[in-house]
Image 1 (tube, helix red, strand yellow):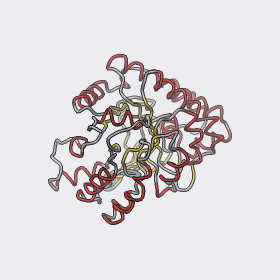
Image 2 (image 1 turned 135 degrees about the vertical axis):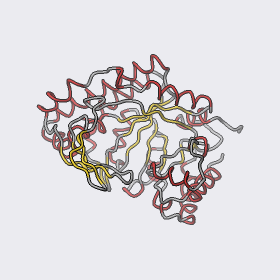
Image 3 (image 1 turned 90 degrees about the horizontal axis):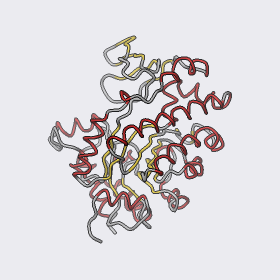
Image 4 (image 1 turned 180 degrees about the vertical axis):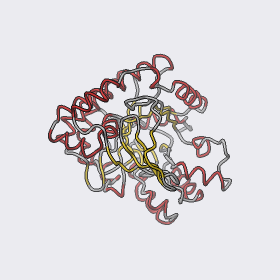
Length: 360
């Protein structure tokens, strides 16, 4: 088969149609790029998609906080951390020396009344919530390189917990489900309204990439029944909008979300990413059980990359790729993001070996 463009390849992979090779994309921590630039492997102004020949590019362009351009209020600062209040009224402690998930300290919204009074009235589809220029420029670059182009952003689960925190949100799912339904539907409609505003002016992307970390190690945050009742309808609403506009839908979730996959399939997701091995996800098992319903994206253990263990990397690629590439429907990616202690040569080996095995 003749060599395809990234746009052709990813479009067909998600459709489970024949392609020349598996797809390729990756996420990196900011410190990783900085280290590789300092070592001279990547030019200071070089795009990583260009450097590694990735098949897609993403534009993350929506501002979804309650107060759109709120300047974070510094509450406390040390040599290593900074405690800030953000535009949702959440109090978060961030690490100053490296990229890390912030510590959730406290939340202004802990129940329905605070949501209805303090946040919901602020969630209007206004132009200041959209970075039109960033979308336009990324779309232009992707088109120039014949890459698949995604609008990227979070869906309702990842929009709710920054407002009230996981604990209050999950308690609400059990004790006040109507509150959670209202938040989910509000954010779904806001997302659609902003997309409509952006796409009517700048054109639609090829795909929509939603980020929804719905699990942790060994289990999801909630049951399949709760997903179907509280989260799935909002997912379906946003996914139906994407499909009506001819856009494919990738959904990312860290953690163990395999019990939720029946509901995720029902919501209309086309491609599942990131398939986190260390959380208990099994790429080969998911391929066997859902490979005819979902394209798969990721599932390669980042711990082998962190350890710079070329033997383990090669063994995993040889074990998994021949199976997951069968019938098309696979894009190569780690099961998380590439941290700074992964050597450039290690990641280069991962890409080269993976694509070699992934040819058709």
